Length: 205
Image (cartoon, rainbow, N blue to C red):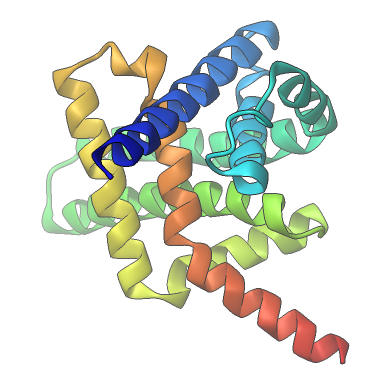
């Protein structure tokens, strides 16, 4: 029993490291700017399809998935990154000004940045599960953000732990951080994804 448990732990660690290294390699191969979006989509889709089956998570599958997701990955990342930069710049300007009104604006802009980060994460998960247009994907991601408060809390808590541990052990950026964040997003959204699938199945009958 202990041997089986240790084997499962080893397999999970191996999958996390493998996905994280694939993410870094694919990001670098895309010259970072146009590689990071497709790389995020790739590791998300690989884990969604195969979870802990490390034998099916291969470089060949990763590369094929990366090429298939290149256009959609860059479109998603470009939209969210552009909006985040715009909001971030306005937040930078806002914090320079004192006053209760601008303090409220600061908190509002921080919330919008947080909303963009979470909806981007949900967009990656939904893309890996459903075939839909870019506009509908983004709309569904925003709906997901407001769909379940406890799902959102679990996501924040999980990512917060990963970021805290990474802060203490920066080497995890190379071997685990990005993959762990994607895995947390996938697992926290599982129940919501099942609800959508049941709804689609009911509408299709």
